[in-house]
Image (cartoon, rainbow, N blue to C red):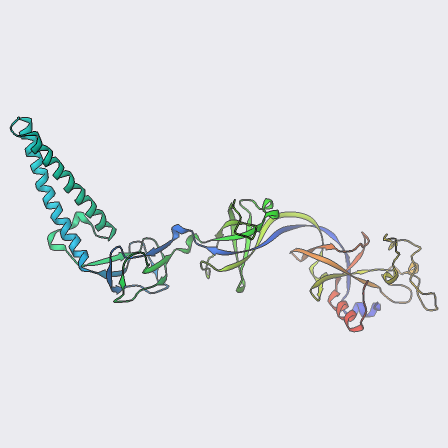
Length: 387
């Protein structure tokens, strides 16, 4: 209970619960992810020694740009073997043409033609196989000649992107499956958020998602749902929702954790001005103006706030009769009564917050829309309790 003067001093203002078109949302958590085709682990195609490292972590690189040069005698040997096989193939092709002509004129035996055909086929396969290996190493077999043999290979980036990690240095021995450099292209960065089974039917393609970084509060981003998973994630009983990051991606890195609010569209919801909702000990409340003594509310569970026969407890002199309350919101004794009512806070937008009352209140109850914070402080300091 406060006096009108106190209520005025805290800029108190009364209003009512209103139905507002508010955007509803679903909260979920997830992480940023780059599609596999936008991540490249660059390894050496042949056992070799690193001669040069031409990039640093964080560098932007283009597809085909040299990242590392490696050297080994085996590289030169394969080039020699390819040139030798190519020369023998030229001779074998000429011999096959000669034996074919002789066989047409019945000059040679059929066996001789078969031998020439087999030799030509074997050499053709050898040249083709060594050419494929040279291409894998980044060498062009069609431009290779005896004066261009070298023992080094330039290892290029297979994609545009940023150098995310370098695992080698000059002199490192490389080869096999271990990657030397990882290149990541964040231009196709998307987010995977995980939604529980009971909520997945509310999520649709094209819905907007507002994102905040778990460990970097204050930065917000947007995404758009493009696919919904069909298999549960391990033991969490959640389904992945995939969304493209839209707009600026500055500061976003593969693997970052995010908190997501999935926009489910507008709904007409009971709402009060956001300033009307106050928090105490982790619970949310609003204050309603009442002329009834709620410490002794009727046991029948019905709402009597608007009945003319409602009475406050006590019959002594000086106690007021709520039936004689003035039109200005307070009774003849000059006291304004407020009841603290717990609510469940919903979505907030444009200065309004959706609320669900956790106990019965009159449908036309007046709500403190300004000054609720001070009423909470006054209640706490005076030791009053609301029932």
